[in-house]
Image 1 (cartoon, one colour):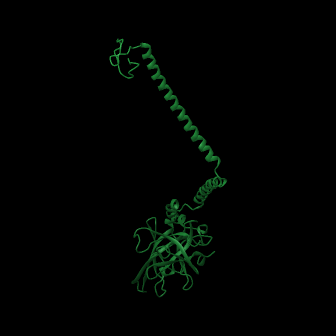
Image 2 (spheres, one colour; image 1 turned 60 degrees about the vertical axis):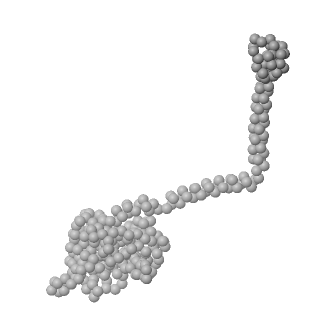
Image 3 (cartoon, helix red, strand yellow; image 1 turned 90 degrees about the vertical axis):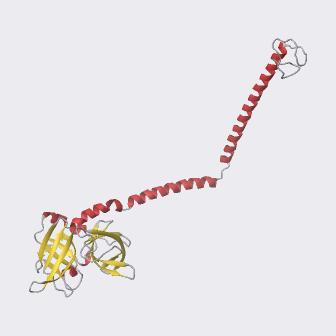
Length: 309
């Protein structure tokens, strides 16, 4: 209990007088003291709650005031930014759909063209039968006007430096089969001048070879754009010794009957195939490469210059 006169000094609950100040202790006074203390605590809590609510209301009013005073320009900028983002997203999606799926289709295209490209090895001999030269290149299987399988290659693959014709060409197709063709006027066609191209007919071609040969619908019917992505498929001497080698590049320029490309082309690529990736079609024959001081650019003979309609 507490003494009314002393304030916070404890006194014995059973005492009638305060031992500190000697005043008579009145139980009613002690209860009143407790009631006063309790009332003060309640009043403090109420004031704290009221102050909290006032702060919340002020914050809400401030936010409402800021939004209501935002300038029309701010709103239009926000709306414009949102609209621009939507347009950009739609444009990206549109462009993604419009682009050719080159990465996804690359292996499919190579797999499709692989069996159409053959390895060609030709021998040159003197009249007594002594072989004096052998050279190799590539060829692309097709169907000629007589309905026979023939391969297109470069003239310089089947002729020597003096324009003498090879007497034997061995043709290895990607089915581990080799055709030996003894060259004569009935199974070879070429011109001593004009486009560097020649055809060799394979009279005993089997069904696999016939089904692999390309026809006119695989020829590119439109010229490629500058920068168009292409593949070169063939048997370069620095490439694989057992299968085709594939290099890629772009159409770097145009030179009369030739496309210029930065794709790697080397000895042995002659007679192979240049493929337009976007349209999956035959552009022509990789024919030769020209080296500069540091780089080289190859030439692709357009099929329109040598293929008969």
